Image 1: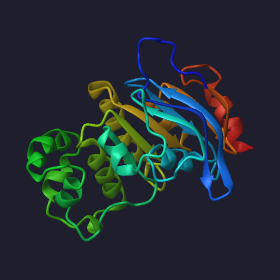
Image 2: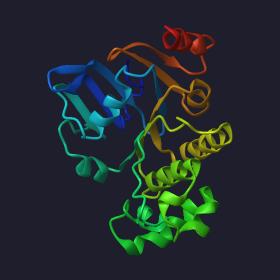
Image 3: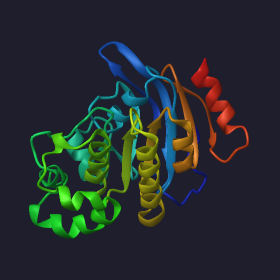
Image 4: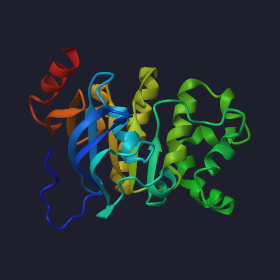
Length: 242
């Protein structure tokens, strides 16, 4: 997949010939992609095609076997997750990653370097997630599934990242929660200019947030394009139904 054509703009994140996997088993087989500032790219595909492996490799949880990763024009392949995060990158994993016995406030503070930053940073999050204000002292594990998902998103956004890696955020969620999450991500995209790599199987949700899509199949990207294209949904559906 080609990078945005604006030669002046440095991609937020870019890969070239990226290969990654587990042990000797290569899951990603030469991934090329680039994401411009403020752009949202949806990575679509069935289970087991390498979508989550891609995000974990970009975030530093899996070391690439070959290829290049650049963050804001600087090499990032092989960096550990904490150093990736310091480059203003947030990650919303598919699996639950909350500390269930900690309060909502304590979970949010984990994303910040200093506790004293919490109040000013929370003011913006409170506007996006009004229910959190009354739940700050409540244990995260006592929230509903949808509320826990929103807390994960809030924890990612509270740091005001320039790039968010989002993995299957709609999985198991009710339509009302999916609609609300979509609205929050669109607002973050439009008002803060946050770039996002959005791994999804829920095509309508992904297309409502992303301007571009890429289909992953067996660790490769056989199809990509603009979500506004007339045949975009049909193209993606063909791969998801195979």
